Image (cartoon, rainbow, N blue to C red; front, side, top):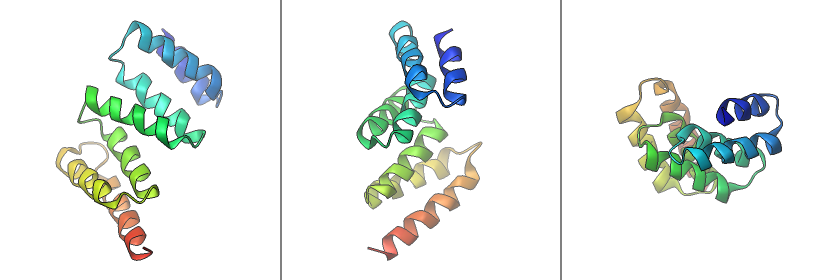
Length: 118
């Protein structure tokens, strides 16, 4: 499948080629939250905050309970000094967390230290 091939390329840090496979997967499966998540990770590596955020928002539209997308979007919001949105996302993560519950305290610490440095 396109997703599996894209993931292999992503894992070997071949981001440009993996991006093509994730995009192909989305063409054939427009609700592929995994492909959108990996596209967000690629744009994170390329430091393209806008496209990273767009893809994370798409993941959350498809699955509002995707913990990894919430985690990554929270980190992005802290980086971009959108502290109120970061706080909302941390609260959301606390409510829905199953796998990434320990990440809540990490994110809260980052948010608190960012607020102090403002």
